[in-house]
Length: 120
Image (cartoon, rainbow, N blue to C red; front, side, top):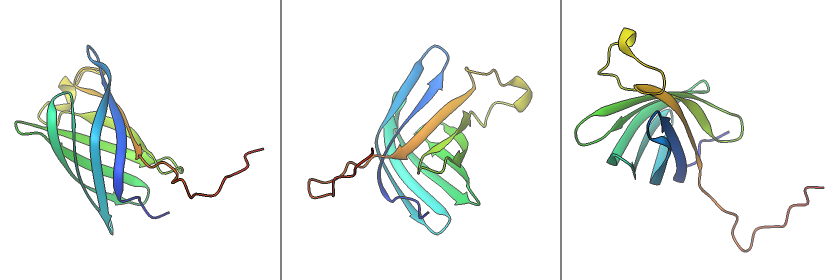
């Protein structure tokens, strides 16, 4: 499956903030290289990463800090995984506070001229 280039949607979870949406995400894929941008609760961000052998690694860069993401393609075009603050040493991570879950998926709706699909 070729990764989708265009608008995406997503969320991340963090204790004290709950599930937070990522808005206005646009991602592009060139071979194994991923690039994107969007915004969420902390502000605007840029994404750079790789997609190889079903694994996705992303660095989300805000103006003042970075968040690392690692996930897997779920077979339906979405990416599911875990985020963490790379500036926090591994032994100091607290689940839900300095690391948590995320999901990203293509944000595309069928066009008005798309064929009707019978799901029965």
